Length: 324
Image 1: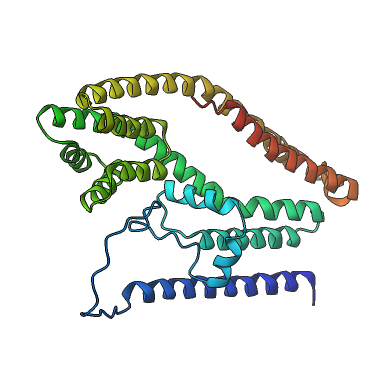
Image 2: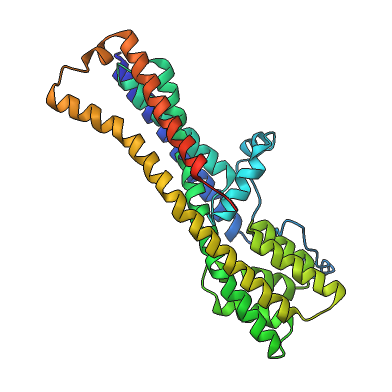
């Protein structure tokens, strides 16, 4: 059996296993959601209880597959990954994400294994890089969503300030802001209002909001409301000052982002430039780069250059990513 047949057999086997796991996961979730519930009419109704992690609004189970869930509980980074999935507003479990990452890594390693001139270290690096694609997608979705929430939040604070000056209590002002705000902010404010309407203390509901949306503006807003509930004061004026400060902070972030865009553009050009030069050399003289593919030392040099290029791209992105 040739190497290509081994790679194809391995890839097909892994894909079939992954599809079976995903289908089983979906069927188990559907069965759990649509199953019949047996009620005991003689039993006393349970007292309402609200958990600190807001389990009423979101399933915090790592995976519907018990062995996988127990395995994932042993790792510390799982909590951070779960928070990032929640902030990205993706209806994915941690087990599904880790399964996708393993699937992508296997596909990347199989593709690298099919290319004869890539050494073993390069195949492993390619597998790791491809395996991180689902995680990069989560980070991208999370960044876009948090940016949109930052843009929407000052208008929502203004709406609550006007409603409270008109005589509405905080709950009514929050309900009005949740109704008028577009998603995703409207959905998050609606969750907070629903928790408070069902009897959860407002301090706990606001704490859940700050846990779901990890923004400095949301944290300041929750702290202001909690402080006002303890000490008293005009909350409408506090909201006016908060909205003004958030808008000024957004303006400063916009200026910093415009300055850092030059660094991002330079990083993208430096990343694409070596690939473009290599493509031009191959077009002009197809045999010019053959030593890099045919010689063992050339393969290691080419693999190291590719790994260094990818690493340099992320380093430049990190340097120009200025957070305020």
